[in-house]
Image (cartoon, rainbow, N blue to C red; front, side, top):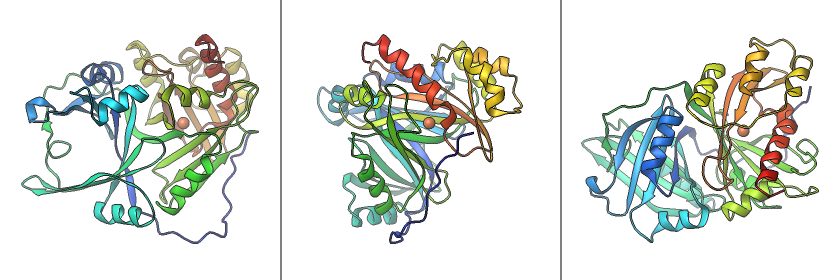
Length: 375
Ligand code: FE2
């Protein structure tokens, strides 16, 4: 059994944490928000709950807000040839713009971040009206990605001020329950700087880390630090490429996203087998591992509740840690460029990230890289 490295308390000045209560939502900038909403609706079971666009008086952008259990995603497209969304999509393709974090006091969180050197993005939003209170302020993180602090005090409106509620629910939830972690890729030798950013600006701590020895196949060497808030319900791993024999999967991402950005979004479920079966029925495509993975599995993970044959048929991976185990599976990239993908994860006591699966997983990614001519 592989053991994650837990962090040693170092002699760092204690930085008061910005009190982040959890993930609020993820906003994507995409080339066609209407069609993306169909993909996340019919594919992943998200329900359209709110809309903003020409009909609501927004002349520049159109946004679809989709929800499933505790997971909220916003799909935003441009109505113009220029402007922030169009420029972002031109540069990066479809991708994550905003990792929004729930806070009790957005003004306080925002001011603390700015005082500690974060760069502001846009203007602070302060809505107090018939729908209650909504406050939000955004700061820059790696690449063109931003964190937005969101405060909804008894906010009764649809998602955010300016959005209209949408009633026609066309999608049934399929069991995706909550955001588990959101991973960023940054350039070689930049990871430590971003670790410090989360320590000094957010007061987050290093939850776990993985070095090139932990995570290396013949090609895909990378290093990863997992930053987290105190309660551990917001986990933000950061990867950088390490020197391998050929092109790291992280470098392939950086080349196609044209800079740092969100690599994958992990969504937790309470019952992974029917969820993955349903996603596959709906046409969501996943990475596969060779049959031999499942032959070795009982020896590696010991007794588990699930039927290994069922896991093998669906391609679900298992990893054991001291406190329990986890089940996980990864989609193929969900847009034209080989950039963002999703992870579906069920935790049964395990708090890590499936380190025992890194080798099988990365070999699977490399087979896809080779098919793309990028290895
Ligand atoms: Fe992950």
